Amino acid sequence: MSASTETAPFLKAAIKPRRFGSWYVAEHRIRALQGYYKTLLATSIGSPFMYLFALGVGLATLVDKNSAAFGGVGYLQFVAPALIASAAVTATSDECTYPVLMGFKWNPIFFGMNAAPISGNQIVNGVFIGVLARVLPTTVIFYLVMLVFGAVPSPAGILTIPISILSGFAFGLLIARYMARVEEDVGQPAFIRRFVVGPLLLFSGTFFPLGQMPIYLQWIGWISPLWHGTELGRDVSYGQSEPAWLMVVHVAYPLALCVYAWIATQRVVTRRLNK
Amino acid sequence: MPSSVITASRLTKKYKEFAAVDGISFEVAPGESFGLLGPNGAGKSTTMRMVGAVSTRTSGELSILGLDPNEHGPEVRSQLGVVPQQDNLDMELRVRDNLIVYGRYFGMSRALCGEKADALLEFAQLSDRAKSKVDDLSGGMKRRLTIARSLMNDPRILLLDEPTTGLDPQARHILWDRLFRLKEQGTTLVLTTHYMDEAEQLCDRLVVVDKGAIMAEGSPAALIRQYSTREVVEVRFGSDRNADVAHEIDGIGDRVEVLPDRILVYTDDGDAVLAEISRRGLEPITSLVRRSSLEDVFLRLTGRSLIE
Image 1: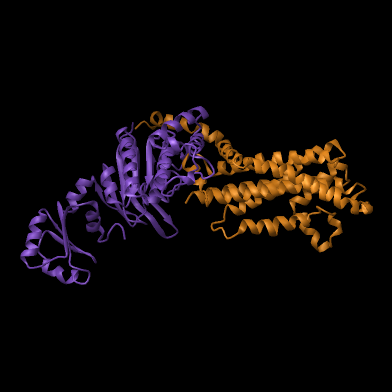
Image 2 (image 1 turned 180 degrees about the horizontal axis):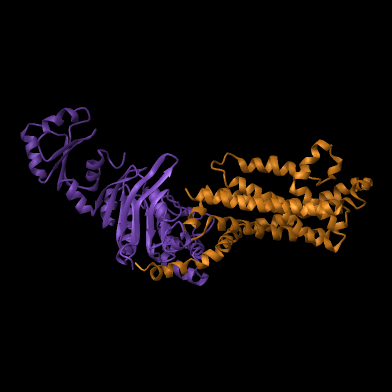
């Protein structure tokens, strides 16, 4: 049997899926997002207005009397980089929770993709590209609203967009890695939302500087990608001064988490598909 | 073309110590309709997943279209259409979008996906449901949509795992009709089933699988000829009397099989057996003469019914 000539057309047929499979999966995610894009758009526009107004305008009238604690800027400018980062974290954790859990469980499309030429790694890549498709508009809109409120003193503040996305991914990808292993849904998504994402928001130097917290709680901020994103956002947005090494950590640490969680999720998903 | 599109040799899949598939060997020729018949848990689905290049074998050899699925998973899968036991249609997408998105996974252009989707909706008799939500379809329609989806890439081999399980008789017949058309067009079909009538309708050749191993192989007619008689007489004397009556029937026909609810008498002449039973003064509550089926083959081979 001259395998080479007979199998040649089959080998060719998988060239495109091997090369672009991740994008096909992302295309699917984006198509699915279109189903509820109106809700997403409304929250993406509504929520920055709400938070910036309530905190940056409302609460600020009280807080600004004590502005020394906030590095000499108004509370609005102080809190804005934290809010955009937390918006990114919330959006990515959503997109990394339900689509991953669904793909195996409630709407087990990952098995269907895998029965086609798509690999486990490509499924993971595609889902994560889909997360970007959700979080990028979310943060861009948030940034524009920040501009409307005059919350960004420096033009370098535009960097809060990629910085926030990085924090979001560092955290969301870890969730995805965890969710990929979940066999039984016993309320893990709600648990993560209430007891992980929620506290993260409170203990990551979001609403007040981390230094204001007792030292024995500050470690939560140090390991939280949200704190790193928030601090770096403040550095670029209004020139908060930090040592250079710490700024390097603010980038390197979330980046390292992303790389680890991305690869780990690929492994978990591949293993789970190959029963 | 190679003489066989699938060659499995001592194919084995173990989960820890448990061998779900225990060294089975078979070949499938191009254009053939090949079945794996066996009860639940026989290892049919595991075999299908290995053939479908999504489950790595523990040992043995497997070649699909001349390729080893361990090395060429995506290449093998690009030539297969897969209808899994559980529909895994995408509930987030509408009927037609399900087909289009699936075609994209094979690297087909959007335009081609659209054309194929329309043609296959026609084939699956779902054209008027193109914009429906998947959830609103009946079980039979979902199954047909899954089959349509599996045909998006013009597969050389179509793998169907329990294609009609859970469907009502009418939906099953519509589905069989569609599968029969594919068979006529020369598509190689590999299907698992625990319904003997389905196996008889669709399979040119089949293997009877039990506990991960192959018990027998052949065409439905040949298996029946080899392992059963032409006809079967079924008599019922009531649950508590069947066993007592059995020894009085002994010696009639070629072979007697006593089941909890009825007695089966295997013979080439059913009417003669019935006459003999009543000549002996036995009066069954109900009696019927039928042709032997694969169910009888299975019973003979394993001592158990297919559906338990």
